[in-house]
Image (cartoon, rainbow over all chains, first blue to last red; front, side, top):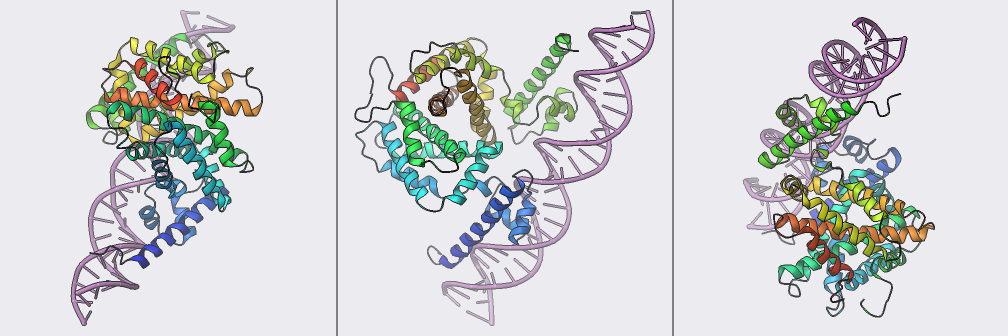
Amino acid sequence: MNERHSTLRDQRRAETQRMIQAHAVRLFVRRGYDGTTVNDVAAAAGVSPMTVYRHFPTKEDLVLADQNGPLVADRIAATPAGQPLVRRIGTALVESARTLTAGDDRFLLARLRLMISTPALRARHLDNHHLLQQAIVDGLGDEATDPDAAFRAAAAASACLAVMHTALVRWAQDDGRTDLADLITMALAAAFGDDPSRPR
Amino acid sequence: MNERHSTLRDQRRAETQRMIQAHAVRLFVRRGYDGTTVNDVAAAAGVSPMTVYRHFPTKEDLVLADQNGPLVADRIAATPAGQPLVRRIGTALVESARTLTAGDDRFLLARLRLMISTPALRARHLDNHHLLQQAIVDGLGDEATDPDAAFRAAAAASACLAVMHTALVRWAQDDGRTDLADLITMALAAAFGDDPSRPR
DNA sequence: ACCTTGGTGATAGTGACTACCAAGTGGGGA
DNA sequence: TCCCCACTTGGTAGTCACTATCACCAAGGT
């Protein structure tokens, strides 16, 4: 069939998505999330409302959509299996934060501030951790086969992700001045104990 | 003015709220959350849609509304300040779970299953932890005055709440057969390693 | 040259939610 | 006891997110 043929179409599709999202975030920042309708976004982007809904199923996705989720999950699955799970996940989260903040922070910060200040966005953003948590548990597949081990892994993963979210909130409040990786490290230490050498 | 005069009116108000919520959950369980409109709920409860919206600002509140939040926050504030925060919060959560499951579980379980299976409800339920987290940090007021201490407390609180949520999901999946307090204890041990028998 | 596929657009809905305004009712002060 | 008023409720008409269904067009492979 058509597996890798339609790279050009994929490129155009990705480009229109990026363009629509850029207009959306710009309008949301300027007029507020609730003060901006999807029709406004469509008009600003020069497309029909239908097109916006095709690329972003919900209005919230206009802010929340990114490709960072699987990246983090893969990084966690690649950590050595010997260490305790919270340390493995924590390390992967800190490394991901370093990668993420290496580029342009402004767009990321704008989106993050919207996510934190808007209840609907904050809720969905937290709920996305559910997917990441499942990906983590699945990525451990062979290590945690019985239900109890999977449950324990899920508990550890959710705790780490919640801690990261707290650090993200703090980072956004500080306008990105503090290093995100350091914030996550500090938050992880506060939650799980700050002894770096040995599992407690 | 009218401070404590209207106890009778408060009673009636609470009663109609309880009645509307009971009808709502019953319909949601039977026909599904998305398959039930607020008008359906209003009709089943014998009131106008307006009245439903007055008592429950959003459709989600028909499932999520309860009075357990402040109860937990108070219990945490009452824990001895000497112990590490995750242990204090964890203990309070386990005790709250015991209190909560002492009564009738069926209504609680039905609501919980709805919250877990319905994306919009799951998101809001997680977001409610944000309020509880803030209440915990505020309840510690005198103990954590500088911003860094508050940040660390927030990180610990969010981690504990996320772990509790994982236990709640497992509890609902087990139809409440396992003891909720035991599940929370196990999940806390998996995340924080403060299992008295064997730190991992 | 077909014609299949995928992106786009217009129309007409449904349903959650929000003013705004009208009416009844119970409770407390005169 | 009676009346006033706050509280609760109901109706109407709207906005807005989102969906279903139609048709159109522009590639891209055969």
